View 1 (tube, rainbow, N blue to C red):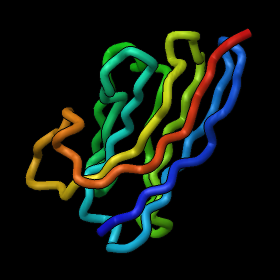
View 2 (cartoon, rainbow, N blue to C red; view 1 turned 90 degrees about the vertical axis):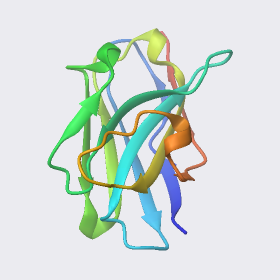
View 3 (tube, rainbow, N blue to C red; view 1 turned 90 degrees about the horizontal axis):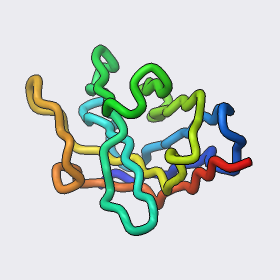
Length: 126
């Protein structure tokens, strides 16, 4: 079992920045591909981006490319989501998720992930 806890959400003005953190406990963190998802009211949960187990490669959905950056520190069992140039449409509950990395696969669906955090609210509003 892996337990995930997100932090760092809050209220920010358009154009502002936030950094979300997700700390994993329970099992060794390093074998897992980590994903950041978000879900706005009335919408399905969508993948924001993901990072491979060793941090060597990342994937982002088109709407956040160039604005969001995912990184990880396996020694601290932590994955980060740095968000810049935030827009009102980025408002959502943000979740981190984990699953074991196999080969070169990218996992993009919520059902691909076994472990989830509780979520942290990000609100972008003036």
